Amino acid sequence: MESKRIIGYMRVSTREQVIKSYALEQRIDSLKIAGAADILYDVGFSTKNNRPNFQKLKGMIERREIDEVIVTTNRIR
Image 1 (tube, rainbow, N blue to C red):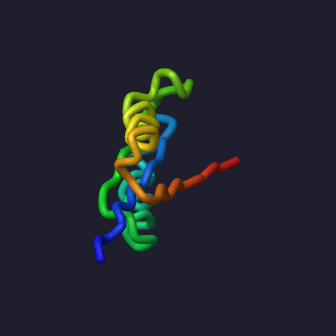
Image 2: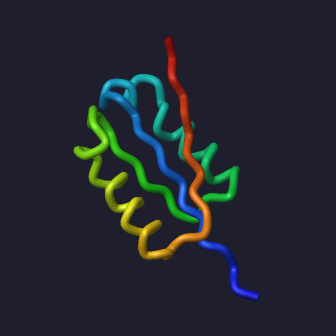
């Protein structure tokens, strides 16, 4: 039986958020715990079309290279 390829994806709004709050590390850990073998992320891009790893993820989905995607949402308001 072949194992599933599971990819995690997240976006962190600003580099400051990454450095000061450890948001990136925390969310990477959450994705790994959830089962993601590989993780893609973008930092500081405001639109979907400007997120290089989001575009990469979409291409992987379209080519059926992955079996499952795990996405984090961590909005602080």
